[in-house]
Image 1: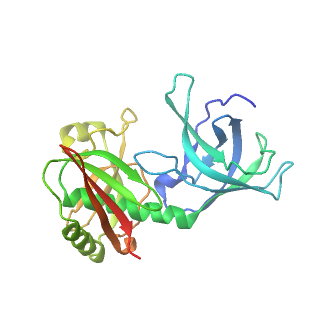
Image 2: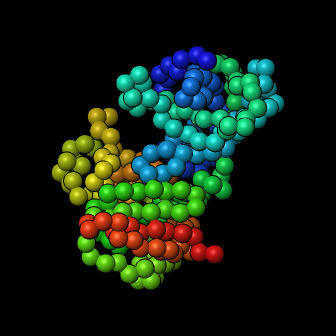
Length: 256
């Protein structure tokens, strides 16, 4: 199998999380997966799971066939550092062979799965507003989301569920923006995570703002989000755990 080379993938999901498919060209194939010149697939990062879906081959020997994609990850170089590749990982039972470099495909995400991730991710930002403590762990999956807060005080499951419901019902807009490295340096409290720092050096850091006239939350974030809190729907705090003397875990789930 060819060695994975470094090819910059255009990240269409950063500007529009509601794009479900795009035309793309295969630029590399290797042990880390299939690299495209552009994609709507979000790679695992910031606690959010990578996207799944299919690549529909539109040229080459596999034209007319579909390849199931089980996960999406950021590429890594020989030293283990992240690259600008986005690697689409075929499902274990995906039929061989793979498309060739230069073939064209239509990259299609599993929208129902992605939308659940978007709803949960926005909910975790609401939770950061309700629990103003630093986060030292995060996991966002299609089935649940959790945040680990650096704190010793107890949390009330029913009270948090009710507070989230009020913020959802209020229909706060969710907007993508950006700030400079200098602006973030001047306001370090915007970073809510102890373990993950926003990437610097490009001159612009992506932000997610919830609320227009009333600011609910503002923080650096590269993930995918719904456009309005009303789109989240019914979410409940399913569990609160004391993970350590200084860690309280809050687990979120969708109401039945």
